[in-house]
Image (cartoon, rainbow, N blue to C red):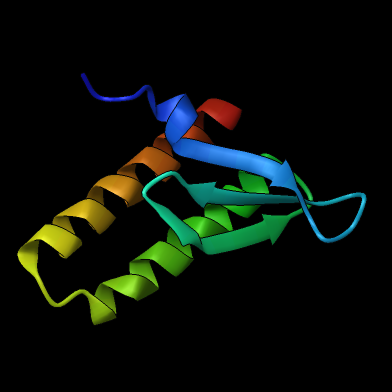
Length: 79
């Protein structure tokens, strides 16, 4: 069974006390920061999209596409 999307987007404290850091469960090496989880997740969407340029296999592209969709759903839920 697939993990809930809420669990796939991980939110932690950022580098400053007022910020947060987010990453996708499947791509912990790709992180983004922002003042709110929604802002950070929006930045993460862009970073994951940029990673598509280096995705050499169909499997990697499909994984990134799913991660982007998961993060976009998270952004929508954050309203």
